[in-house]
Amino acid sequence: MNKKVNTLLFVLGATLFNILVVLIVAAVLIIGIYGMVVAPMLPETVPHDFIASMLFIASIIVSFIVYRITLNKLLKKIKFEDYFDPIFGRRPPPKKKSD
Image (cartoon, rainbow, N blue to C red; front, top):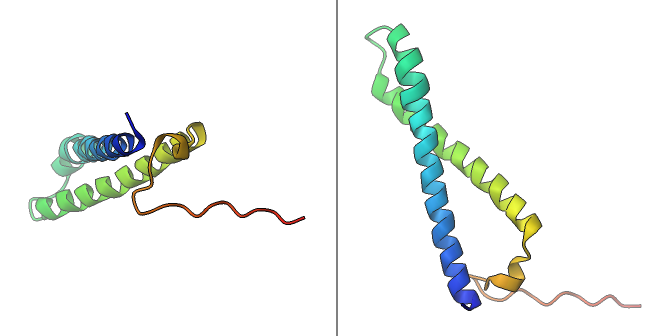
């Protein structure tokens, strides 16, 4: 496989990972914490759909944080230049140190 295929597979895998994290965090927040613990204690007049949508937005934010942490750990382990092709053009060559 060449670098372009590796890049495409990485982007697809990272996207699927991010969607999976959003779904898991949303399920934990909405069903687990809100649905089983918080919602039964709230009065009937509380807008449950608004709270659920805010928790879904929170799950997107949490998934972004998890994605960044995971990507930073991966960047420390793998030299991306060796395996992946840049998506938005070439990187400039490193500057030579003048003596």
